[in-house]
Amino acid sequence: MESITLGRAETEHGEVVLRQRGEIIELVVNGVFAMDSVDATSEHALADAAGDPPRRVLVGGLGLGFTTARLLDRGATKVRVVELAEPLIAWAQAGLTDQLRRISADPRVELVVGDIADELSTGSPRWDAILLDVDNGPSFLIHDHNQQVYAEPLLARALALLNPGGALVIWCETASPDLEVTLRRLATDVAAIRVPVSREGREFEYALYRVTAPIQRG
Image 1 (cartoon, helix red, strand yellow):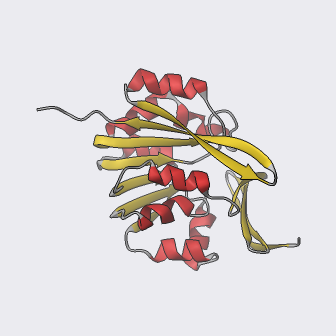
Image 2: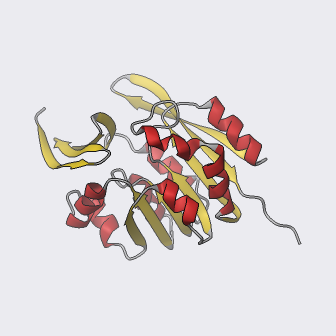
């Protein structure tokens, strides 16, 4: 099936391409297939792990907008989305896909060009959830510099930005035992969530790691 390029741009971190094949939207980053609209099961699971209702949420990575849209549907009051690729936010604001248009137009959403690592390092607001979907996980990075996102110092900082009982949730394309070990050094309430997906006759699992911030007892 012939693909139509909706957007293409060079950035300091590589090329970003948004394209469409029939009804399928695809995102390619730095020459690597990042995601498409065929199955959003894991993106929805990421949003669902934020809590009920999610309220104030910080999201690392815009993608095609499935996680943010799900948060809005579940009643989030504020969603701050930090995206490294400036063209992707520009395409959202230009409404190149229906979902990106909807997200950009929602007053509860703040789209920010930046590195989530910098956001976590300098941020001060308290969040009810922080969702990290900035890469494929520590085992298969699109951008090498994202390794710091999965390292103990930044994860500890993310937990420090959460309200008591808040959730830090990390999306990975496959199970990451080393990441789980790191998270268990930082917190006692850590859950590994498997998300089974079927694609083109293949069965496989994505992984989410959910860490709950301690609730302070009076």
